[in-house]
Image (tube, rainbow, N blue to C red):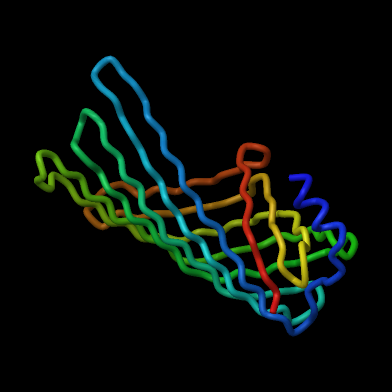
Length: 191
């Protein structure tokens, strides 16, 4: 962290009006739970790219997407695989604090879907499919490391999600307030 901060202190370029923003994040997590009846393991992988155009010194608009896979094994079934994807747009307001640090807030809106398949003894025992929308507000800090290349840090956000299951299952609506409960690091480059 000290090396990153030292690199950030010697940089002098900020994003300029008319530049193209390319950023993204990768998430991987693995969890194992032990119960009296057996173990449960879950592996999650998500890739979330964004591309935007900075049309004003403080404003950027663009598109965002996300693809993910969740694999879960437990004593109820051999394997359950969930594929998620989303696609939408975002608007970002950026307030430079100095030539190195900026504060920004992203407002994202788009469509999402989920496909889940469960297997037992190598036989498919269930399949679910759902579609919905998402809305999210994410405040973050940007550290300009060198010539428009930077690191993005956030500690949560505010979100609303819906999913409607096609197989007659229930509809899901969720509201998330995760300030201080989440932490993510991403990279970005302004061209």
